[in-house]
Image 1 (tube, rainbow, N blue to C red):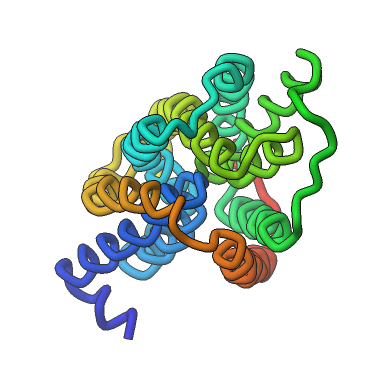
Image 2 (tube, one colour):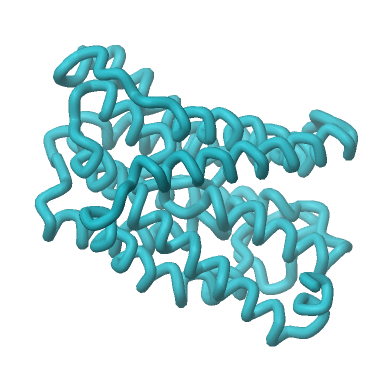
Amino acid sequence: MLDLFLSETPGIVFVLLITGVFSGFVAGLLGVGGGIIMVPFTALILIKTQPEVSTAMHSAIATSLAVIIPTSFVSAKTHMSLGNVDFSVVRKFALFVIIGGFGGAIIARFLDNSSLKILFGSLCIIFGLIFLVRIIVIRHGLPNVLFRACIGVIVGLLSSLVGIGGGSLMVPTLTAFGWTMHKAVGTAAVMGLFIAIPGMTSFAVMGIDMPGRPTYSLGFIWLPGVLCLAATSFFMAMIGAKTADKINRDKLRKIFGIVLSIVGLRLAYSGLSAGGFGIYL
């Protein structure tokens, strides 16, 4: 059925728009940026429609980061209006997640398609398990600057490396440090901007001379994908953020965790079957 949709341009546009709907809603609702949905679907679309492309995962990740910028902006603005953003936390983490955002994209440039599938799949499994467990508060308040630096760089690096907004890591981290779920989600939405902007910029610059990219690309960023995904995710992020205060989010997190784990296993297996880890020099 999917192959039938992807055989014509209108079908490709439709699938991208629907992907944007779900990723935007989840981004606003859970503060996860939406990349965890956009990356596998965008990669699948590129593989199915442009089989000559050898950088499908790089392009999917870069495209996701580009879409996360407007999505996180809308989500963050909505959470700010609801009083769910702690800017003291943003100020203490911003520099470190920016450094990690640049570093993740640079590392991704030298990994091949299979390696990125394995990494993305493995992180999906980890994130899925995080969503399934109940986060225990280990302390009230942030740790010292050295620990904040380590956390910020790791969150920024891993998020940029696989094209997500950082909420999958930052929300449970802030919850463990005593922030409420609503505050953690809103604050993570703001920090998604500090990850996506340096990550997208690095992917755009470092992909310019790479062969095997999709048509109509700026570096690794697939521009048609950005336009279609952003068209719907932009608005759905606002709806997701407004819905966050009205539903049983714990139940949704568990469902999302199961889905993430399944997607992660599938992608990791696909990467291993295609040859495992490899690098581009």
